[in-house]
Length: 265
Image (cartoon, rainbow, N blue to C red; front, side):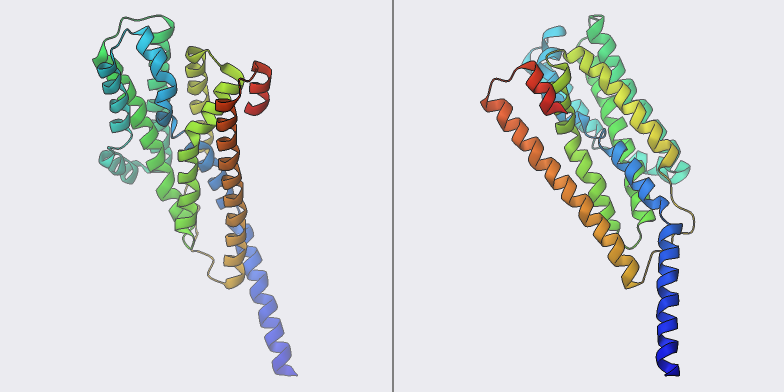
């Protein structure tokens, strides 16, 4: 009887410690939520095709020049070894702030050039797209290793959640454009600037390595975290299916502006 009671008491104590650890590290989920907000503005370079025709018309580019401008943004979003050094030297918040500055600054310059009809050639336009590409890469470099650090037992899952929103960001923005801004691309670019600034400010405030996170080693704690991630991934996959359905519907049916707004919501 004593042995059975002792085992029960030990199990109860272990479960209490698990709950305490989950509460203590609950701010990890706040970090994840803020990181997702940052990552969902981290793939706007993927929707260059949405902007390309207007850029081509405003600046009187031929197709070859337009390809160079678009490719510069892609290169900027992929070449980032130096950003890793910046992250290691200055940490998450500085790197994230730098990324937000470059990304919003690049789109702001693009908006200014289009709104005021600056006579820009291929080279300065390519520099602008490279700038916002670097910014998007820099925010990603700030977020991903931080997520891995605050979810030490679920690194791959946490990183996968963040990267999923990088991939979805262009589609989310395009759905918003079609629902509320279409066909005003120039105003949409200014909206992207505000969107990026807001997301990165939230990121700078809340995306950080949680002090004292050692991982939750017990089966109970790991099961709780795993279930929460599974709910998150179910929502992500539902969003993917919804965005695909909206895109197909818009392609097949000529929608009114009011209906477009409804789909955007």
